[in-house]
Length: 255
Image 1 (tube, rainbow, N blue to C red):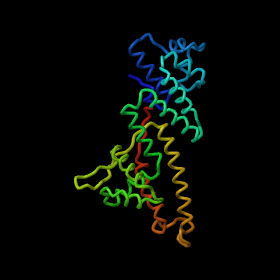
Image 2 (spheres, rainbow, N blue to C red):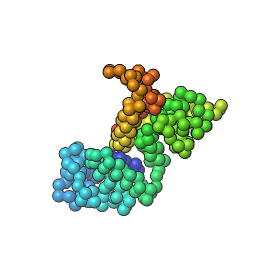
Image 3 (cartoon, rainbow, N blue to C red):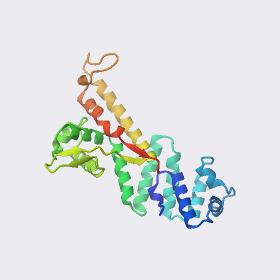
Image 4 (spheres, one colour):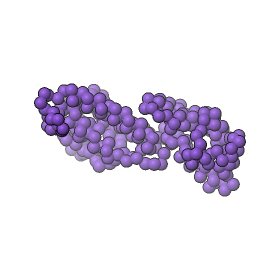
């Protein structure tokens, strides 16, 4: 059953909704849905999905009523459309956070939605990548105080613990019988809209960290063309190793 809370792309949601209704009732059509929504242009829904039309806030309400959305579903749909249309990073973050609030207020998170939340969390914080790289380089056996101190800039013990728990949930690390954590080759698969938003956050953070690291370079350590990685501050070396899991992530075009 098509559930709007599973989607981060409203056009994909409408397309899947249409096909589900069409398979249940061959007489169902784009024109019928547009007519039920009270739209004069009977080809509106079809043209919308083909990228020939955009949907206004007023039409969001009409489409929600035609589909039979609950209050929470209609609210989510309106914010989903705004999220897809938003251009700025802060604007996208605003609508994405509202979408998640509506999910909690509505039907709650399904297992699939919780997985996507974890994926977004991984992308959103720079230190998850760094922690995974440190686990790859050193034998981490649960000493979160040491792990937190090894990350630069420093993170809290709580953040270190939460990062390890997140990496375990995503299947990116596993705990061996000897109590030592090891990385896996598992990559992240998520919707392109959500991944794009979180990666923008991540790239901005890495840019700021790189600026700080360059400012800390010892005099004479940076040649004109390329710096020797051995001369870079430890925090930047960590992040250079830490970018591996991000580059290994995959994006699905489902949603």
